[in-house]
Image 1 (cartoon, rainbow, N blue to C red):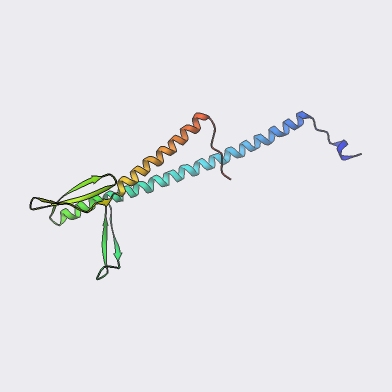
Image 2 (image 1 turned 60 degrees about the vertical axis):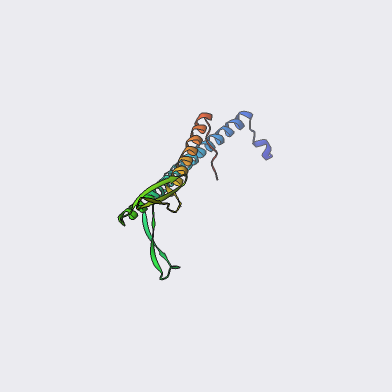
Length: 156
């Protein structure tokens, strides 16, 4: 007796087998999707925390860095906007903080004359704009996937 004579599959057997394979694939794909969504949420939380930390530093932070090119080499401060304003006012000057788009400057008033400060990059505005864009993008992606009723394909 040949092997071909012993094995007979009907169409119903084939459909049932295919259904079981697809069902098992969907279960594993669902598990992969849950793992992927958890990793995306964790990534989003970490990025949000990092951007909020940069925004807080850009506003209130100050730390000292080594400046080897100075004569003599010395430690110099890197200030956030409000810390810089506070340090100037601690030296007895009347100063105002002026914001632009992604920039700020501290103007000093000496004997009623305004001396314009140096324009500096504002990390607070940059990180808050980046935070808004990132969170909006994640929210729109989530709403689109819910609207269509389909999940994004998992990456393997």
